[in-house]
Structures are given as C-alpha cells and as structure tokens.
Amino acid sequence: MTASHRGEKVVLASNNAGKVREINQLLAQQEIQVIPQSQFDTPEAEETGLTFVENAILKARNAARHSGLPAIADDSGIEVDALNGAPGIYSARFAGPACDDQANNEKLLADLQGVADEDRTARFQCVLVYLRHADDPTPIICQGTWEGRILHAAQGENGFGYDPLFLVPQFGCSSAELTSDQKNSLSHRGQALRQLVAALA
View 1: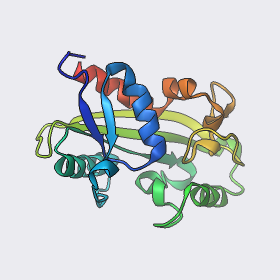
View 2: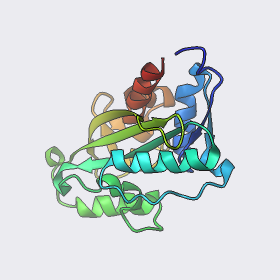
View 3: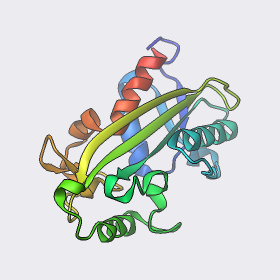
View 4: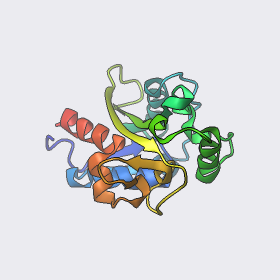
C-alpha cells in the first residue's frame, strides 16, 4: 500500500459492531482508521439492489456523501443450496425487518428441517466496495466466498450472524468456534479485504 493511504480515515457503511470490529482488525496493519458511519449520523441506505454488488455501492455512496470521507461498504450474506440460494441478499432480515441474529438462525434451521447433511451445503459471500468519494465513477469491487455447510444446531460463542450454524470443513467446527485469526484467514470478508488492500497498494 502506498504511503498516501497509510493513516487514511475511511468511513465504514455499517452500524454492525461485528463487521466494524472484523474490518478494523484486518485493516489495522495498513494503518487505515475505519470509522463507523454512526459517528456521522448517517441514515441507513435503502438496500434496493438485487445483488450484493448493487447494495454495497448504494451503501458506500450514502456513507461517503454524509461523511465526506472515502467509504468502504460490505454487503454479505449466506447462500444455502437447498433453499435455492436464500437467504442471500436478505440474510440480515431473513426472519423479518426487525429480527435479530437468533431469529434469523432459528428460521434457517426451521426451513432446513429434515434436510440431510450432504444437502446442507452453503457459502458465505462478501462484496466489498471502496469509493474515493460519493461520486466516484470507478469503485473498487472485491469479492470473497467461503464454502461450508449448515449445522443442525448452533455451536460456539464467537462471531455473529450465521456463524454458529456454519460448519467449517477444514476445522470440523462452526465459524463461531474459531479464533478471530482463524476466521479472518478463511472468511469471505477476510478474502475480500485482502483483495482490497492489494488493490489500494
């Protein structure tokens, strides 16, 4: 990464504490300070896109416009093959607009009731977008994919979202049972962020 990016302040288009923590951990070595959009009283962007890419760009433009800073936006979710790719872009609100992680996990388990282990294949997807400013016509777009399977019950206390239900084949445990370093080395978000760091270098 060039010296011009070191010490840079970037707004993160998310109020999700788990995402803020993960992205800060991954960018700390680059000396990029990630500031959540809540510090700028940024209203949530309407996620009207039909893809992770569209929604990430909408969120990044909104955060850059309200903060006056370069922006990073992440749109991510889980795709379950037995559910034809659902919940996908609706992962955060799978159980309804005001739902929490537990409600989303309970709905996913209910929808997969009776589905055999071999048919519970799934993957986390992450699209990260970096905008230099709100009207940047050439956003940097990075994508990471993490393959796994959906467990029959939640396991582990680390992580957030669907982590307790996501079986990591390499370790034979859920994503919520990994250390932060293990998760960052494998995860969809870690992959996308490493691409972004390389693209900004």
